Image (cartoon, rainbow, N blue to C red; front, side, top):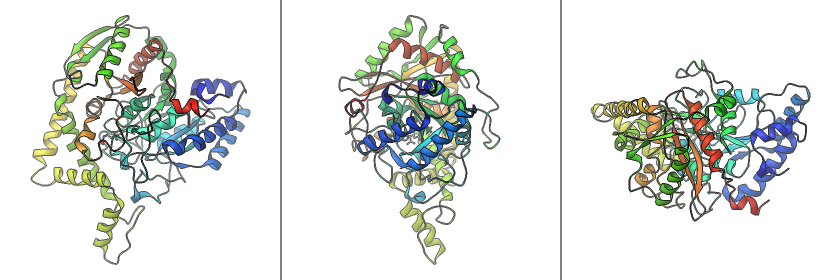
Length: 488
Ligand code: GLN
């Protein structure tokens, strides 16, 4: 079995035909983790015994003709999504000893579908960051260049998929945390429409922006995972009453339909890295063969990062108030309750998390609320309206996913604003609640992946996937990180 040749879809076919077992596939995946993870450190937790037990149970279900739609497929999960009985740390010291007491809805759905979990992946602490350097435990490295970051905050998930340490993964995206690392690691990442995937059992960062979504090696695999995790959940009050069926055939069929595709002029400024510009132009010339391209304007784009950095920290400061040293995880023992609270939080949270809590608390405080949070909420509406206006003229929007290729480890840690700006093209999509997908579209001269972002109207994740499928076929890239070939 050649792990680097496998996808979810092809593995399912092999499993179905009895040519491989889930046990073999899972063993190969664990072997891959043993070999490659020491180089990149994508995992916070790997449990071989657990993984193999799940694989064996899966093989039994297949023998008993009770196979689910993902029967026997090894996956990894970002460490802010709860799997009952296993650690969920959010890459934070404050949750270092926390064991999840229940399954997230997405996990329940994946279990029912037959998935095998191999472990939990590294991330920026509480999903705050764009490089996975804010993990309290260790940074993760980019598989294409070990001196560079994999992106973040779901860096571990993107790396795990790029190196076939599991055939897919789930991450979360609040301002770009699925799409940006997907772009940096050369894999596909989808942030679904807000409300399409249940957030029950996802540790909250900024609840009006957070969405769970899949990482995979190609568009079909992304669609397979997305279809399984999507759908209404009464346990999430923001869950939409929509279900997704027959996505693969829909995508294939719709990929033949000519579409009107918008190019936001605000995204294509002189600041864009020249090699990203070039890769995007290649995509555009391909798209022109079948689709109509049109320049559009999203005039409030320039306020998106500032708006996000009021709203996201404000929500985070409220969500993270629960980590008080009493209810969860790390506790600084003291007879004085106030000291216990203060010290538990001071020692349990990292620098970036504290920065966000302070920014958010300030923005929400009496006297400043109107000037910051309320104002930001109004600008958010303007950003949303920009997209609504654009979608009257076009069916989809295409842009780069990131303004630059993956940067060096340490390059932006001292300058939070520079770090924040790496999400400049992804943040508006979260503010507007839209679906966005990052597709690998090329490599720089230095062999670093480049991603393009496809953005759709709300609940049209299907046409986002259809266009990605079309572009993927036309580009016909096979992106295999060099360390993968060297180690096979
Ligand atoms: N990089 C952004 C932030 O730091 C987005 C993170 C995310 O999507 N979780 O907040």
